[in-house]
Length: 319
Image (cartoon, rainbow, N blue to C red; front, side, top):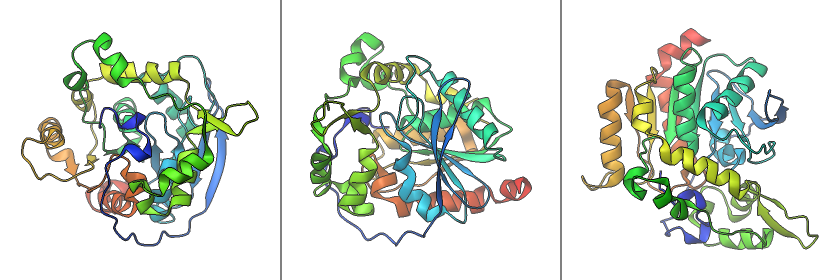
């Protein structure tokens, strides 16, 4: 995970070379709202076959971040993308943004939908949530997919204390922006390379809501206080220690390419492989942090290979 990426505006990403993406397959999407003992959570259920992919977005993002990938996996596979508590259309409780509680929410969603053993895929913060889910629900987890996240120890980036990291991890003030500003950003953003500027803007718009002033201005759906609660829990997490509790295979899909032996992500992948051994699988995708939107074909292909080859025998037993 890039430490500042979750707070970055699309216009702040470095430019990348555009590439052609294969047309997405048509998929049937059902929007659901799942009550739990805590918040009611929004779900985008892309119907399809087994195994199911439980798709988790990153910090300050939303379930639509997986739309383009899901279109390429469904209907071969079912993709259930969840708005985690405080995000998207889900409820916004004051607390419960620690990993254990967020994972418990997901356990209730899985139970409510009567999902069979599944693969949990997460982007950025969602990758760490996915690893935590795999550790908490080993009998439900056929595999974990970590898209540009999961292999994290943020103390190495920000220093040993939260007091040192807090200001750096605080997101920019996005209050007062408009839908047109979001659309204009997409004209020059690499995020639009996986679809087009209008589609990418629609996905990004899921991170915001009307600010209630009647002026057409927007504010982030995730409140700042909740954002910082999550950031602190992420800062305190040792992703590599968490991996020691995960029994299933794990696919890492880092953004970039391993062109330098001292690159931080290359070192992170080496460290993850050292923890997981043969259960670690790595597929690099050349792009920016938000590759589920920028490079949906490549991300979907990596997940498909993982499901059909590395997990083939397990998926067969789960059917």
